[in-house]
Length: 147
Image 1 (tube, rainbow, N blue to C red):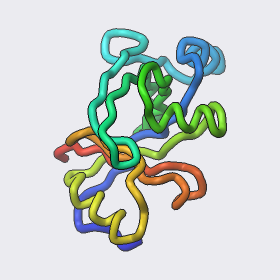
Image 2: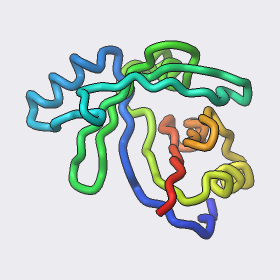
Image 3: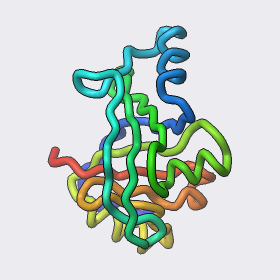
Image 4: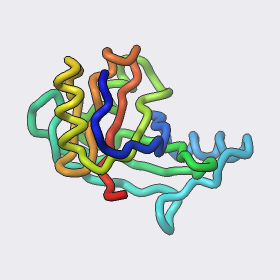
């Protein structure tokens, strides 16, 4: 896939979990962390966007640990149809996606489509995940941020 002419930065590795509190306790017991979501340990975030090209709304509970320049992002699908729940149901807990920051989400989407890679899910103006089949079962996330 030919890279688009904008900035991309590795930002995080996303791991889907069944129980975020248990996952946090396990990682922190191993010395990985601390985990937080702002001033709390976790945060439930509501999203509105698309799943498989159809309108969708969902809630995900999230927590992050800063590991050098990259974050470990734990994600528990809380409510609604979402890619995280699909992964959990199909393959169980584990690596879900590798997340990059970009300064132009529309360009990233167009680049994926040109390369024949489908869009699995996206939240309006925030992020998108590529279909994981194109990258051996791991989605690529592009999250828009002005760098």
